Length: 335
Ligand code: PEP
Ligand code: MN
Image (tube, rainbow, N blue to C red; front, side, top):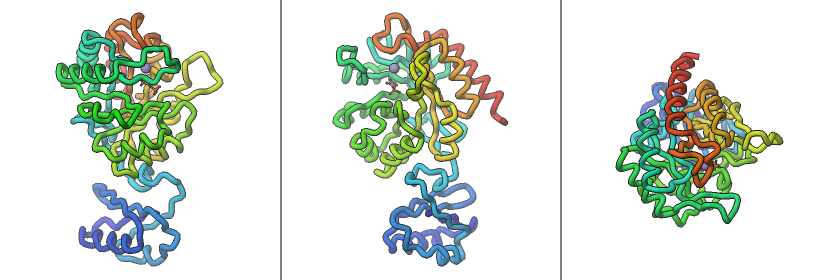
């Protein structure tokens, strides 16, 4: 249930209302906008007398909501959420350009790629240290050593870093990682999501290969329900009957999630297509239809990459994509 308060409600009146609602065993989520405060009532609202609530002086309107995701729901929180990744804002008009290799391989590789993507305009560096590979015989990532090299690249370039976590026991290794990625394969690893709900760090939550948008938001809800509301959603392609591309990029997820949720939405065209020449058109399309950011794989020598070379851009190609994305964003800013 959502209660929208009248614009001039005083802080004391808000507090009195919250105490009264809490005395009915309801959780209250407060969203303070520039003009209005919205209260999200969480818990068993079936016994709340909606007429009584609507009759209060401070209440403008009350709506029952049926969606099972409450904290991620835009109805609870009408304004776009802006997530701060070590000083880089994503959402609400702020664009996150995340780039870097699929996997961290060597010191030279990560430092070179980091410097090049930074020069091209990226504001967050990616690099996988724990890799979820389909084959147990494929390169599994450099693990703790990889995180160490990524930290080094952060100190050399000043870029905040993002890396994927697969096991909550690894959290101590992620102390200096600014944005924690939950990969597509772990989108419904609920124990991992619950643990990430208790940390004080933003989470990049990728959509599962065969998950609906509602399921994605329910996974975000797991993290938010634990108290960590800094979640960024990521559309990275879903599995369809079409084998030509690695996955099928669901661009309509962007306007759909925009309606459903206030959380920022990032698009990963690299894993969506699996083919480097398709990354640029899909990145531009995502920027044109309102993504709050992109995540793009870049390798200094894609032919020799230990993982996902076929979909990785060279630094020169990334220069071009980043510049074109800026032009597209400029062209659609008033659309
Ligand atoms: C990745 O970003 O490195 C990755 C493995 O992506 P996904 O979980 O989307 O497959
Ligand atoms: Mn990859």
